[in-house]
Image (cartoon, rainbow, N blue to C red):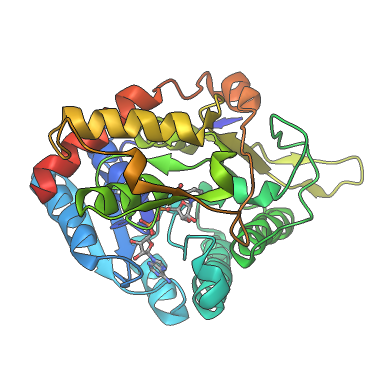
Length: 357
Ligand SMILES: NC(=O)c1ccc[n+]([C@@H]2O[C@H](COP(=O)([O-])OP(=O)(O)OC[C@H]3O[C@@H](n4cnc5c(N)ncnc54)[C@H](O)[C@@H]3O)[C@@H](O)[C@H]2O)c1
């Protein structure tokens, strides 16, 4: 593995106003104060834009004495990405910009093709050309994949060695495509690349389209929440700080460039899972969420939970279980997620109370 120091480097983070991206940028300010962090985000309105603006304000609040550049624009805009690479010459690229969400991909497929395929292709092309003219170029491309690539995988825990050729949503298909495209580019142009399959990431200022967040909003408004697959779901929930810890560690270890027996380069390519490794029953997760919402004062102590929940069937594109085998991450980077749902949901509930009152 090629060790990479972050300090003094230029780091491009796409999706920097997003949930994971904003947390990563703040962490880089702390861990790599000498680095230049360039963030790009198109600030689209898939969910409440004020949340993205809030995250950017938090970043700005910490940006004093840090080299921080924010560019508002789309990774699907080839000219913009090329000019960003020409101007900043990033050493490390972390691609988190994407159209996320499984259900939305059923009604809005265009957004997935544009951001996740064309956008990612533009990033790969820019990485490829970063070596033109003998320049040092990009040392490591790290990009977000997703646990959704495992589809209805029956074998648990999900391992990166499992076959993942049966996506059950367009979102999953685009994420698997990212891994395939990255493999071809790593092979052809020796771009060191690492894909990270994140498992259901949650935390303060997270994504309002995700269950814990939308359920909280509905409960706080006195509305009913729907629990899919009659509660027979297991999710490997991962607290955002654990994800960021994993990303920062992975950024510092790029797959080696080696030559195969045929004299051709072996692609410096890797894929890892990052997941809690402790799948929780959805109903248990909801019970902890409710307790923490009461504790934080978002809901009154005598709230009638039973009266506000409705068990419904499975939704198209959903999978009944996700369960990460993070052994490879632990082997190569000495880390596996450690924050449990009690601690994580407490932080979310307290943030929610402070943010929404
Ligand atoms: N949160 C999770 O549970 C989870 C799980 C698996 C994978 N992921 C992946 O992790 C990454 C980050 O997810 P997140 O939860 O922070 O989502 P997010 O939606 O909060 O962040 C993505 C950000 O990218 C931006 N964006 C979207 N399309 C863009 C484009 N074309 N150009 C520039 N910016 C664009 C959005 O405005 C948003 O701020 C995504 O790739 C997502 O697919 C997330």
